[in-house]
Length: 261
Image (cartoon, rainbow, N blue to C red; front, side):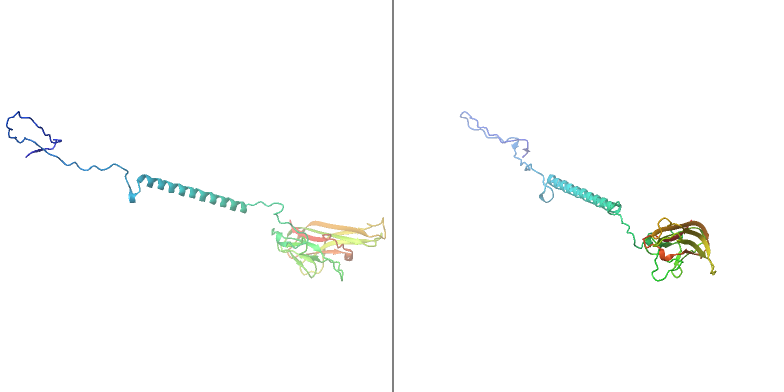
């Protein structure tokens, strides 16, 4: 028996035969056949991995990316601020309050950075005995020694270790308590060379008649000597004063020094 699948539904006809005996029914050439339709899937949302839709997963991923981008931006901002603070600390300018203040009267030999032979000595007052050849303080106040120049405590000399042209200077201040027309003093700078005991005068000043207007009263006077001189290695330079007991006790009133030109 053939089956026509295109036949949709069975048709049944009831016909009145008009009293005539029913005719035997002939089987139709085609017999209706009911075909079973495949089940239709319901249309709905598509679900991704572990029951999460693709749209929701994409949204969560984008949210995480935004969070990470924001965290990275904040970290870069913090790093930049820390770097700027570090640079500000390194190049912090010195103000009047930050700059180190020099204190007068302290030993500051480390401030001399020039290696050129030079020296500057401050006067020292002898209380018990007075010698015409003055003694000095190499570490008081602004005193210093550099470039191999040395000070000899035993005789008060500055000794150089390099031959050359030097500027030598010396200043003394004297106070005559009972000044008279005959008051005077001699101020000189001399050197000794090698093993010779004889001295060579380099500079000398004679002062007299400086208190004729007010005899019998105290009088203060000073003398400064300075010149460019050719010195040899191991030369020793000294300062003499004829009346060392009259030397002033004022700070920085008496000094002695030299430096290579």
